[in-house]
Image (cartoon, rainbow, N blue to C red; front, top):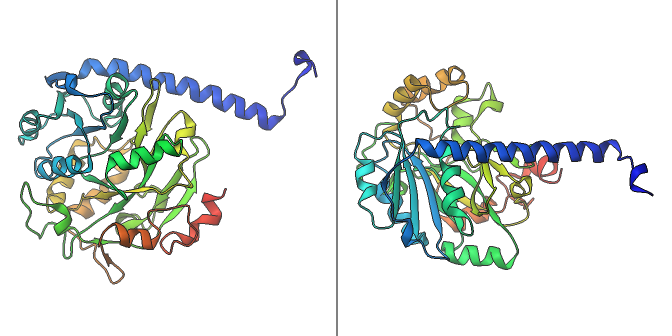
Length: 354
């Protein structure tokens, strides 16, 4: 058929329009990142030490001194070569600690976390400037990556398989007893305190716009969002990416562009062990509610912050004690596309095969 007589069907036309819209959306995020770079003031720049095959970690944080010693030790042990971090106005010594680390480059900003799309404009700026050609791991200070092996081995396997990303399920860990009642000091290992997790009770769907799997559930959904499960925190992330110029995170690390990067079904995913529920969560919940910086419509989460500030007990009759990678793999949590998973079995035919 001559090209001038070609008329795409409705499905093809919609796909072309969606691709065009997403292309412009990605360019907009890259433009925002370049503009947001102006917010960043260099504290310590050691990026000249980054080698050609270095695995990089990107972090945006505020007042995380209680976590950072264990965080840095954890990721060094995994094989991260360099950490590129943005301090959003810390006052607890976090910035001083990181600036003294020989494998860390640090920037500071006091600009609005919310206005920067919850830090992602700053992170996209650093990824665009330093991440291209590297395997890049983007995490929060309360997320500890866990995979089947150290990162150099994982990324080598991904390259052999021709894959650009590895997805992760955020597994939320919590203590036995009321939140805030435990003892924890800077430098302590969060995983020695936070031993409980929900092995069941998850749901998922495929988001049509960006094509990613949207997983919800866990202790926050169970305890705080039972009446509005659609507002429960999102547990799927794509933190490990072989970065290229023009890539951009859209919403935290829940989704990114180009769209193809969001489909990590079929491979073994990692875990992000979520250490949010340290004793400080009670006071931090009061602070974050007052700041109103963490959600697009913060007033919708007032009840959530109020409930956290009361120090509830998340451990319940069906809580499982976290034992490590082998246990998570046996439960099917490390391979979300496996229909044998007892944790997520109810969602596969509805979402993963859609």
